[in-house]
Figure (cartoon, rainbow, N blue to C red):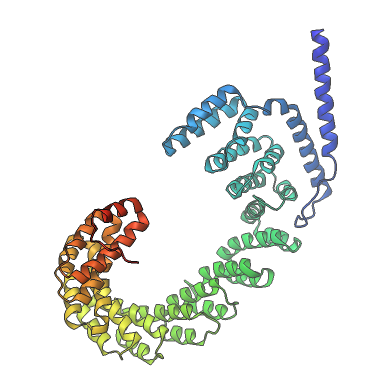
Length: 505
């Protein structure tokens, strides 16, 4: 009886395996982005999938549950509070159990909640499995990958597949549907192909049907091409890609060109469509070109059209900042020749920092000599900020004695902000002793904001000791609002103990 039962059970398992094999030979649905595959390769893929399906069916009973010993040990490790120790023990746990019961490990991982620990465990298990049964590893990845965190699984798997059999690896891409891992699989395959045969990878990528997969493959291959021939990479990106993929690839190629040929890069940038990548390239090229030919770089920036005002201002400031390092007189003359506006003001501030490093007083004389308005204001701010990093007390003394009236408060606040980073006690003592109410208010507002972030109770105590009642109340209310946003319970308790305190709006 026992022998007949065993025979029947074995026959049932065999029939189940044959049924799964038969079903697996049905033509799989393929993504429209997949490349055409030679018949011989298709046969190899189908054969491998059939064998994997049979193995999966035969082990379905084992994979349906987690061994109790594994479940208990896993629960113990997951309860460890220290994340580093938990990660170390989880890694050891998966390795130990995978060698004993891989199906139990897969089932245990499948039951974990989404997160980094599940993603790391799935990555380990599937890579281990892929070394001997790549198609089953892919089946399980498709079954268990649920979120963007699991995309690394597909990236690692397809990189491994490419090492095992590059042609078969690319054929397997047809099995990955849009969703988690789709982009990662295509990029990993293209990258592996490009590392061994860049020209072949580009031909393969270009021959793919129009769609996301083609874009992923071409863009990835172009990263390798940009390192070898950035001019060819730039041209290919322009003709073969569109939208953000094109812009990223153009920028990547330019980053290889700019350090060696900023003038050549400038001529390429002119033809780029407007985009954040173009703005970044303009800033990088202007800075690199300014080191050799600042006058030509500045003239080039002036010819650009389609740039945002912020991008153009950054480019102009880059050129004049570097020019001021080597020829301050000519850089100053070039600044004055610019029209009044944000570009000139931003450049003046950057130049002021350069000049103040050498001599704060000479830099101040230059800043004060500029015409009144935005350019002068920004230049003064640049000088005073740099001076405050070198000698905050001296910068504060000059600001109170010589800074233009309307700008004095803002400049002093900048000085105190830097002073607090160096010696907060000295900054508190200085601000507390100010007698100009407007200047003290500006400086104290900045200082107390820094103090509240570190020790709100001490910050409030310092503000309570300010002599001027108007300044004291304004600063206390500002500090209280910041404290209330961060720790409302403690802030309200402090206010409740002071019946005369009026928080204001």
